Image (cartoon, rainbow, N blue to C red; front, side):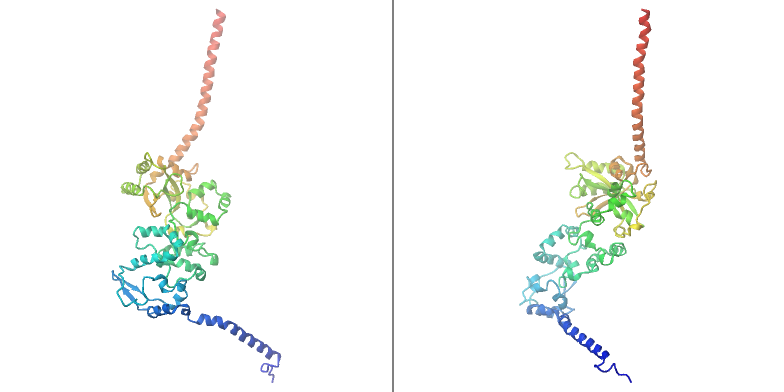
Length: 450
């Protein structure tokens, strides 16, 4: 009977012995790391912090607020010990509490969970001054100032007792998690888009919208600029097949062609002067009042109302001339995030450049409000053929198109004038030459007779 597998003196036995020793050495080397992972993370906490967590670790610990809401006071010790705030300890953020008397005397009244979160933001400011400045310039902060109860505060995106560093968070899904709490439909649409399915290279919300200084999508052209920052070859690649490339890129939003199945509209944006920012600093109440009055009809703003609106903005003494700038864009934010691979992009010119094109059936007039979000009013299709909007729609008018009949008529008139005026001038020259020549012929014979 062969027993080579049972004695270490054999070749097979020696291989098994070597493998066993290797496993043991690997375990010895990894034990410190495993022990560190298994060891309670709360060892990094001070004795005072541990005393706080002895009570606050109870899941049922909460408090009834002024409006009847229940505010949970429970804190997971292990999560807090692993957070970036652990080194500061409890009193680093709760300096208003006296550890010696906390829980024994009366507590300050709190109206609601929202009021509590607003108050705690001042504590965040103590350490995060730069970040708070960015936040205060964002559309989220503008909504807070406007009284919105849904605009995100620090604690809506960051659990102060479990906040980890950006390097530890890592994956893009974790980055998008706070956004999807309010923007669920958009987050789902983005997840199915070409940008959301890139694996490790997939974009996350902050790549286009920034993290704390989030700007409203309607404010200027920063989103298109964001697209061009990655797609630098756009002008060259589009020029290979798209006539008037630069004009298309200026007057058409990227999703209008790159989001399949989208519904489009013409948006006439109110701009103050030549600045690439919509007129949000001046005239918002005026726009709201005039547009509301004119927009009470089912058809929305008509050409006369649009003319009156611009006259109000451009009164004598106005700092800058207010104009309209037309742009073809998608109808909803969900559609704007449902971008597909470039092979599925719209390349059929007839989609827009034909009479009765669906893209031109919906027209709006908008300007940026004080918080950057668009103030938008529906308009009648007739405004596209009005003199007031000629400068705006001219940006995406194609010569020979029959979408906008007034421009077609004006174009034909201009062509006719371009041909008729030189022709008439030539005819007049010939006529005057003949008239000047006739008296000379008539005087000749009379002189001979005399």
